[in-house]
Image 1 (cartoon, rainbow, N blue to C red):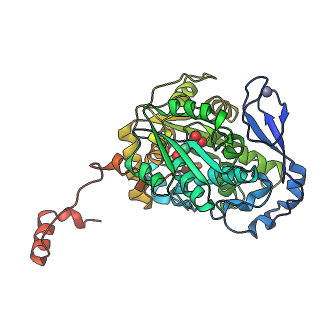
Image 2: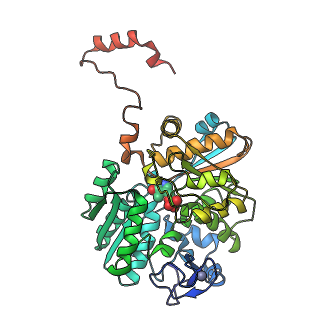
Length: 422
Ligand SMILES: *Cc1c(COP(=O)(O)O)cnc(C)c1O
Ligand SMILES: [Zn+2]
């Protein structure tokens, strides 16, 4: 499909975000000099030649239509079907939130495991295979474990997924069913992550979000590329993104900049606002008080997929928001449930807790004028509600139970006439 003539595709090197030193395109993620995170550098001039709007539009409707800007050397070998999820015009939700125009980027239906993590995992596993790995692994708050387990199964790779012990049943079963080795750690995510860093150092495995992190993280850009194309090649004025490590937010920012660099879209001002749960808000707390650094927290929230107390990209997420003049906020467990219900009742989309965070924060940002009411915004809804049923059980209303008789039904409607009201 795309001419990957060079050995490394369109990748040039791994480059330190702090000092700019360059490294070979191996499974490494930190600079040896200053411990800065490594990021993939591309040959943009060459990418520009093959990446025209017409060329992109003629390719399959998956995230791989932007392959020149994704960090693999050859054709993808894992997750061919991932991405190009619907961008839904959300008029009914717009009305309820009091904004002129609203869009939902709906990754609740991403393939194959119903969250945006399929984007990062298909990239990381495709790259892991290129680098010769046979075993893949991750430290996860749930969705990443699901996606690594499923995509590894389909690719014939062995998988180890490490999770905190208190995850939702749905997320645990969704990893076990694919035959992955699920290691449950008696600790919170930050302890899981630290253990994984130690194991990664000596195991010879591809930890997608540790030693493979430079490649993995780039997969998130595809969400931003798709939003711009689906809006008719326009950068949205406002994008609202929920944050765990903060990586997705920084990569959506980067995706808009790259499309400008490749002349695929006109440069217009944009903001990418961050959303967290109040029970785990290291990034939004720092942003709201104007700090450049976050203070680690101990998570206590129903939004378990976002429960990272020491976010790896928190510093860069703060820098991104500062650069674009963006805002952020956080919401309580009750507001998260309200956000889930509001999105479901107005648009027919059932999001997990992370989606409730995004909707709840968008509501606050619109109410406070940080997203002006006469403007347009995109909400990134990143995971499916069927995986976090525990969070809404007992909060979603109740069934009416009757015997199978018309008389009983008539009686019910007589007793509760409001059920039939529009
Ligand atoms: C992992 C995750 C995020 C955020 O990921 P980052 O670490 O900030 O890139 C958002 N939503 C869901 C549902 C997730 O699983
Ligand atoms: Zn460096």
